[in-house]
Image 1: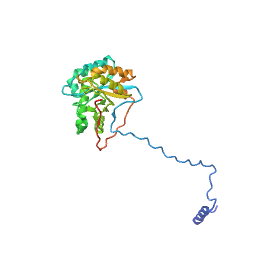
Image 2: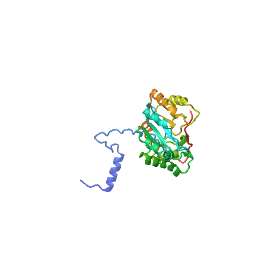
Image 3: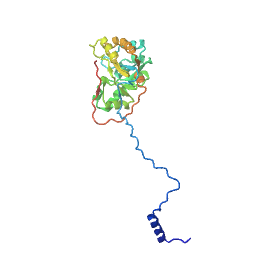
Image 4: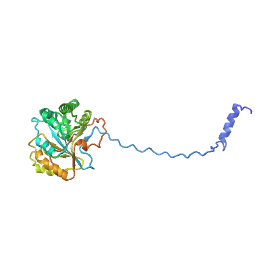
Length: 275
């Protein structure tokens, strides 16, 4: 077969390009082109500086009773509160102040003997945490309490209760850096108000409690009506069908992502105190 010159090859290509039969389809039909679908939208990503927890699941009849042991000048202890919890076999989360623990070391060691009690961190000196502008001092408040509780009991608290219920995103983020989850509450008992009688505390807590709720009370002041009200509060809540559990049990199905806080100022979350 005679070899074509380059000029002949070019002319042949031009002829093919201009011919109606220049392109012959393959003998096997190609699969039809599938229409490309747009990718599904990304799921919204929760990005919290750190969780500020006020309740557990609203779908379960569970409730957590929590008791703060605040560091004060007197660092009192109302043993009647603990006696009622033990006599009624009621689990509870006790938020221990570091200063209170140093003033009551034997009490803390005694409380640690009962498996139904869970320990939380209530800072060392009970400051208004959002007003503590030095991040290192915020961490010291938490870490000193962690060390005191661990030295006395061998337990390491996982939860942090802000004094006065005051917390902002910066404080919650710093607490997360100390391996603590911030626990506030959705139902204040009102027990710091000594003018409120025990019956009013009972009626308020039993009526206002909701599934997944966290109730705050105190165990560091004998003038409060807590001890007098607690037996009827427990009885009334159980009569309504609540299972009383620790915060850890209440939140066992929950986990939260965290991210660094923004620089914009955040007003503190302040939980009300009096019903």
